[in-house]
Image (cartoon, rainbow, N blue to C red; front, side, top):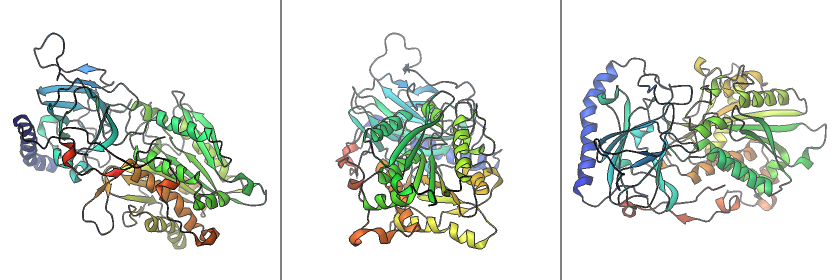
Length: 518
């Protein structure tokens, strides 16, 4: 899964040495500047914005200064004009070094984190350093070993770059911004290489996945269009339950509501959400029992425009939708407005017991999966709220109860968790489920385990399975059959070994994992 050359080469040595030297050079300056930091907020910083970056690069050929004529092999061509793409500018520094600028979220220059771009017209064995120079975040998992992901046309499975060739540092050359630099060696001239902040999960991928579910004509699955985004993309709602078991009008229906991708750059949330769905519609005995006793309502992509556009946090119009739950606009925030209306309507239905709201996110500074919950005066309610995360911790080796926290921060007042926690009655529990963009610490391990698409979906399956324990439905398992969840029971993909992208990739051990394809 490696992506840089391990073979000795003068140009490679120069590239990596230059990268290391810059890091050492900036370390001293970094400490000095951190003492005089002006408004470095943990979430985002307005400093270092590139106001001129309003669109993505489109098949941009970066030639050496003074060069004229047709581009030669090795004159790199950058592109981000595709779904979920993001790259606003490229500066030529030298033949092996390029500064890359993230395009800010549409209509909101504060947020510059997500990137997703392609590079082509490469020369075999060409070695480069890419510097992503205008991050809006200060704290980042890049400091802890996180690295971007890469794939190419001949090797379409995403892989992480080797952490040893990635540096994250504060540098005076770029307006005190944090810079993420990585060295890479292209190894196949005819390939198009794609680099991203994390594994992308696009709007089109979701539509393809949902269409495939619909074609299966499952009697316990209903897909409906809850509304449309500003740019007229579907807001999908899935209902998963055994309807025959819920026909009795006097029987109260337990309901779990789950949403994901309100923040469009948090793509791991979609893999978790797909894991939940895959498990709930499967033939696994636990899934069958859950469908008999619980109604699951799932909105897998709350911000389809932001996802499509390659934003990190905002909608088309520059709103962080997860700060507008109190009074969403039907024309500026139509997807949020539609979901809120539905939840309010269900909460007023005496036949429905809306017991859970879970909003799925990804976290850029912490490891593992964990939850945020609300704070209550009633101590008994506080203890009851802790039950689900405790059970999930037992079922999911990557979930951390110690990282789970309960708060009432004012800055989070407009979030789904906080707003709905105040709206719903005291038998309902609202959580934000977070998962690291990078890795988790397994029990007994001293080194973090990087997340893959498959391990994200596995966390989703474990979330779904935990409702069996929460509702104490284990006695419904026939013949005391083991209820451990295996991937083969909920997805038909077969195990494959990934092939490394980039020169020297074969020198690293290849990790066995499964493509999670719709």
